[in-house]
Image (tube, rainbow, N blue to C red; front, top):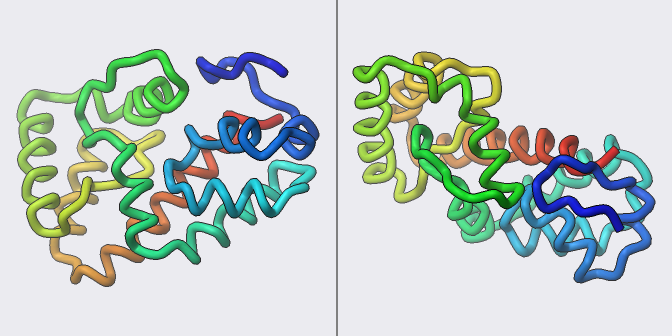
Length: 174
């Protein structure tokens, strides 16, 4: 079994499909912290290919209860926070936010203030698939989403989570 602790070695899908339940769960846990999502993907094996597990992931995320989504959100740092640590999820968070990290102080301050306002309004962290987005683009999305009704925002969050998880699955498997 390859060491995937730092995200620098992708796993063969066949290894995941043949692994015991606990080992398989540990392979995908950094992709999404929802225990129900992990269980559904582990129980749904074999997946055989990245496309298949990505499709299964999308379906699982769509079926998660809101508390399950909140469990996944709890593992995501605020946009703009500097995430310490060498484990895969921390490394991935830094990579995903790298474009948004290089920004003017005023934009950084606006992101921090926007995060606080968002969390007060929706009672969870602002989640966006930040890969490839500038800080200004993230701030624009945050500002726009503050006007969403809670149910509409939950749908957006679920879609953003699915996008992030797809990217992380692609970093996990070959």
